[in-house]
Image (cartoon, rainbow, N blue to C red; front, top):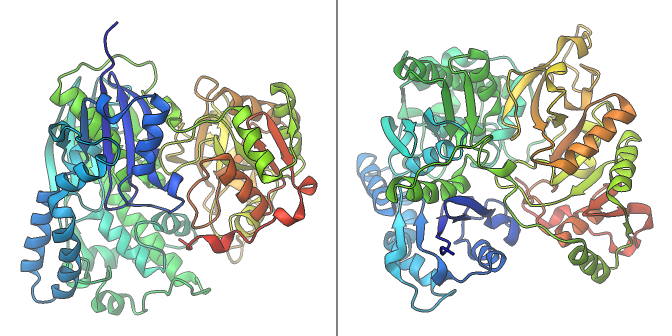
Length: 608
């Protein structure tokens, strides 16, 4: 019997550190460090992730053939030096702060990684460590797991070593970058600057900006294009650095930025989120969509290929992704579900396997991401042991009874913590670490936002809809298994709006809890092939109510990583107003729990 070939991919030291294990070129495990440490966007070396992978696979570090890191530290250091010189003397303070870390740790990254890995195995072979390019890692994470033999690949993010946007062409096990835009001209950093301006956390709150945009009008879009960014017809762009300070300062924007819009940046704890900031959000979202569509259009003309793959942080902008689908520039579009830096760990491992080792890709009926269910799972015996130690009251159910009782509870208005199977890889909960609700109930959105998630009331929720039913409910022309495309709610299900001021609580469709103010929804299509239990639950809810979907949001509170373990799930259950916890084949009901086990949960996490 041939020996298995293992490759370990790593990302770390910026945000969303992760570890991925390939077994003979197949994705065996993919996990993010934050899920284990409970520190959101944890950037530390992924000790816990590696420890979990080695234990779960039953191997040691010495069994791994190669270890691949997702970018090249020396090139990134070169960018920091050149940027400091170009913007001297303004960037002296930020330069000194970054150099303290770089000279102490990051400049000698290989030695740092070797020292960390030696904690798992003394005398680890340092020649096994290889380094990829940041954008190549992103591109590889999009193309190689996709179901396409050939595809154009667009990567848009903040910045890697130098690149902020790249267009590549993938063919079989070949992936070549052919166009790029370099720092400091960055669509990702432009969007992040507006995230900061609207009072949301950098590298965390960009999805809030996207969710806020439909409440406003893009009245500042022309001003942005006239003053802040010059956009060419092929989608290339030039960012006017006189308005920004991310190259040299300790925050994203400079004084001229605030002067341009006539208002200061909103403070993060400011309860006043007025129409002005809604219009700002709508404006930068419109500009972002324009740039993305121009890049995609030009790319479609450049390559005679039907398929497009997307990755990088900007690829998590599912509204822009929906516009790409509507454009029909490409027949098929596939987005890497872990498009941010965590996905770089996957990409560099796949790039090493296919490009460096020249291993062929195998044909896939679907993609090779296994629904993104690539993390830990727990048997009922393990769950029971944990719950007994915690003092929980639970009921063991058969598969059929579990699904029926949960669907009944949802149809009666319950908020349900749903913890099943393998944990998702990437920022989206896709039905294994999810909080579920009834999309027909107009109060579901405010209940989940304010009483369970402890977050802003404007935040929209996604529907998980049966794959065989989504076309009857949404204007979407393809499956969306990873919740990365926004489509309109079908006109047959919409409710005509009353004229007058925008009312966040006004029902806009027969499924108001998942219908945003612009009649859109961030759709997840659920297939029995990738998640049979979740599909069974939604099917039963459909049978009971006539509605083939449930509300799906991540199983956590604001500022907390998605729950990873049964302990995490029970603590979140007891620290929020969740009515039911369904974990494995066990059901826990809130009124039956010891009230002394209730905790003040939200204070445990820094708000995002």
